[in-house]
Image (cartoon, rainbow, N blue to C red; front, side, top):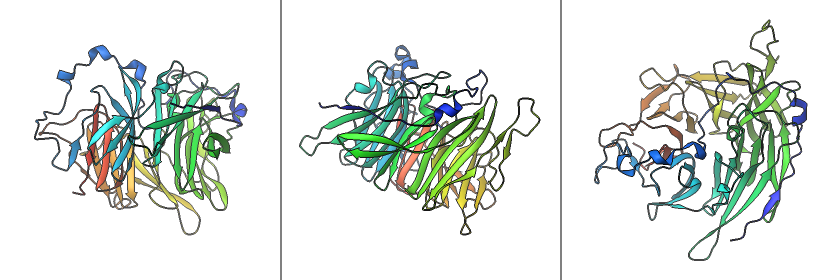
Length: 427
């Protein structure tokens, strides 16, 4: 199988933040969905006969709200991310036995199969999962990074897979290497948290530490060109996600960090160019200022933790998780920005939501530990939320569900520790 490697040109201004103090013990928690290091899963503890299947019987594989269990190739898979398409889906998972694996689901045969070439599990390539994204059913991108928490960034990879047109179909993989410049800042997060890939409208983007790149060049000679860099001066800047509806409606979400303090950072690109939506000045070492003093003319996000799980349902707006709350940041007709909050009631709340997916401004889906929630009426009295049952045979699934995502309310996936649940009805 052909596999070409091309070192990407990563020209950034990370050196400006080289002296920022980050990585001390007790730093703020990782944002958003947890990432699993495949090397930390203890295979000796996994017994297929004892895996919790929620009390399934052969005739009871769906919950009362239409979430149906799909059979995974291995019982120890922890699925971290999924990208659904009509009739198909691609997922990336961690396995104690097989390392990082990439899977494809086909509705026509109702089956998951592995499609990776295994090279992502070579020594030093990657043991932390970042993101997966697919522009169509014959092309897939995913990102992996080696574990280096609290250390300087290490070389990381973005894989690109293409399906052959021959029968039986096979996949060919290439990979691009992201090498951090000398003196890049330490990362207090799992490195996969500040590394990912995503695309829209024929454009493919990657983010790495504090810089967004856009893919240029030919398929056989890819080149990742710096698109925008968060300049933090004496502070360290991190990007947690990039999303939008087109190259002229692109949202960059991250944070400014120094020691124990942080400021949310959001940048929005329109046809007029990039514009900072929120940023601020961090407290001085003696704590004589507020933790984050928002700049003039910018909006204040507030709340605890980092923004995560960014998703844009329509032009000029994004949804994001911040702790136990959901934020909608939007650009008004007058060009000004605002933030609206929604807090699920105690009855359906998760201590820390892991993902949000919004098919429209008025509908949201949330995933957390053993729970999937559907929200509506966002912005009206905090929104209306109700649990969408994933209980199988009456038994709850006490597992982390790292991602909920779909193409519509009648084609939804919820994936996590040992489960890939598919919902193909809108009830």
